Image (cartoon, rainbow, N blue to C red; front, top):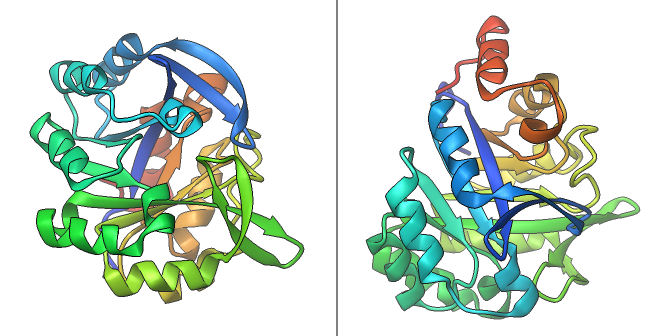
Length: 253
C-alpha cells in the first residue's frame, strides 16, 4: 500500500489516433475531437500539472513507436507527460525518455512477456515505467482486456496485478472498458481490493463525468484520477475540478 497523506492527482488522458485526438466508448466508437498539437496548447494554457498521451493507433494497427509524435510533444508540451503506444522493446522506452517523456506507459507487451517489465524497471528505474491495465466485468469477476486485439481474455484482473506488483513499477493505470466514455462515474468495484494488492500508486480511469466521481475514487484508495471526456463534453475545467477537491479538503497537487 502506498503512503497516506500524499497529494492526490488529476490527470488528463489524451487518446490519439493518426495524430488526431479522439474520444471512445467501450474502447471503440472513435470520435475525432481535434488536432493533437492544438489540444496540448489548450492544456498548456490551463496550467495542467501532467498529462498522459496514449497512441491507440499503434495498438489497433500493431504498429511501432511514432518518433514524429514524440518530437512534437517534447517541443510543445510544457508540463510533464507520459507516453504510451507501440512500446515493444527497451530501445522504444529509451527513445521515449531521451525525447522528453517523463514516464513511459506499457501495456500489451507485459501480457505477452512478463520479463519485459522486469528488464524495463531494471534498466530505467521503476519510477519511469507506468503500467496500463484495461479490464472488463463479467458478472462478479474482473478480467484483463487485450486492447491490441480488441478481445476479452480469461486473465483474472487481481491475479495479473499480483504479478505486476511482484515485479514492480512506478504506477498503474486501471481502465474500465465497461465505463469508458459514458461519463457515469468510475467502476469502483475492484478498487478497494486492488488497493490491498499493489504497493504503487493507482490511477483510476474510465467513466469520469464530474468532480464527485473523482472524490469517490480518492476516498476508496485511488492516488490519482485519469479522465478524458470530462474535459471535452462537460462544463468542468481542470481548474474547476482541482478547486472542487480543495473545497472538500482533499489535498491535490
